[in-house]
Image (cartoon, rainbow, N blue to C red; front, top):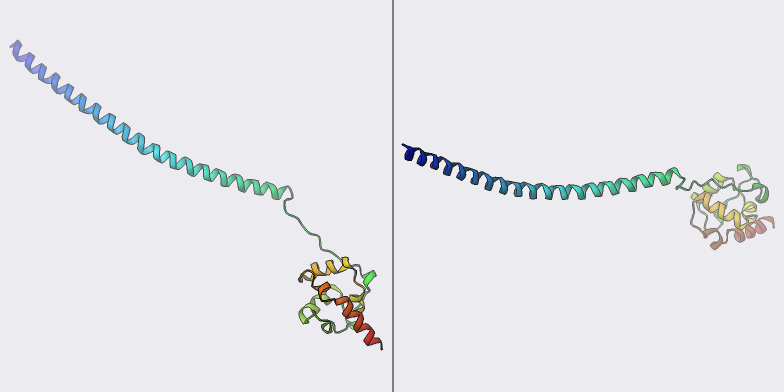
Length: 160
């Protein structure tokens, strides 16, 4: 009977160790599998988090720049009509006679208060820059087409 119990117990112990061994082998393999699986996901997520953090910092930095006055606000320039002369719609000359001024540019010049050849003749370099900004026309076009000289010639021919 003792021999029977020992063999039965030894079989149970052997069975127990086989089960424990298989459990440990499964546990170790699953630990490595899930460790590597979640480690790669964690690396991907940390890269995504880093990218998002960089984008947020650049966005925040841009907002801070704007708040500190990073955008230049231009004040509208004004012409000194005391120097160039004041004219009204009644005094209007046909400005399209000047090469480089078409109907569209004439309308823009009229909208800022320039109606006559005399006003164009009296323009200074500073006034020309201001007019270029106000009518949003090609820079240097007024000088290149010599609007002042043409206006002077038209004034002289009109006066004769």
